[in-house]
Structures are given as C-alpha cells and as structure tokens.
Image (cartoon, one colour):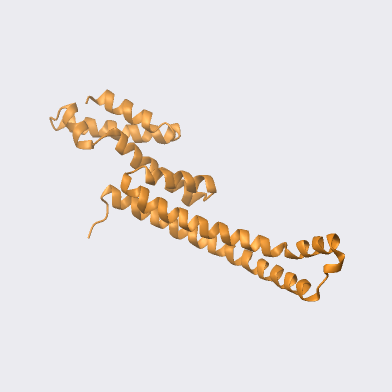
Length: 185
C-alpha cells in the first residue's frame, strides 16, 4: 500500500475525531513514512510494518473516546467509549459488552427502585382518594418508610454510580492497553 492510500484510509477512518487532532495523528504517520524512507524502506514496507489503517483507527478512536470520558463522563461519551473499545475486536464483544450490560442493568434497577419507593406515599394518597374505605394506618406508615428508604437508596445509587463509572472506565482503559499489546510483565 502506498503512503497516500494508507494516509487516506486512516483519515477516512478517523472522520469522527476533530480536525485538529486528526491532523496531528496523520502528521505522526507521515513522519513514520519519512523516517522509513530515510532508512531506505519502500512505502509498501513501511505501510506493512505500521499495520492496517482501519485497526490503527479503531485503537486511536478507543483511546480518543476514553480520553473524552475521563474529561466529561456523560452518558453519550461513555456509550461511545464502550462501542469504540468493543470495535477493537470480537473478543471485546463478550469481555466489554456483557459486563457493561449487567452493570448498567443493576444501576438502572437501583435508580428505578429508589424512585418507586419515593413516590409510594403519593400512590397511597391516590388509593385513598379513589377508595376512601381502604384507609389503613399501617399502609400509610409503610409508604412513608418506603419513601425514606427510597431517598437513602437514591443517595446511595448516586455515589455507587460514580464509583462504578470510574471503575468501568479503568476497565476499558485496561482492555484497550491489553488489545494494543501494551501489557508488559
């Protein structure tokens, strides 16, 4: 593969990276070609030694999105980082997606349970308005207790979500380093 073909493929694969950062990445690979040519290598040999442009782009995208998550861990950034890491290989489909789905389900269920507990007094009031004869003091106190438990659960889920997000981002970074071959003994 020639220099121009390699650079064009890499540039197209990195289209989602902002122009300035993409320009820096492309410039780095241009320098690889220049250094290789100074050593007497052909463009094809240099391109082969660098690897496939699509695989390089996948690794760059994974690192880019993980960097974005570390700066601003919005849901969109986390999702893009997860998909970029999964895109590194089929192996990651199981190793990244399965834990992500399980953890996301656990966190979502905790938030839903907390919210449901908090609104239980409202449901008790609606029940009394619809069926005035069904008033029961135990039900009233149970709904108030559930509401308090819901508030505590929501507070706990806030801190647990932050912790899980941090740990999962570290796991994604570890996975990217592992796939890139950066794990040295």
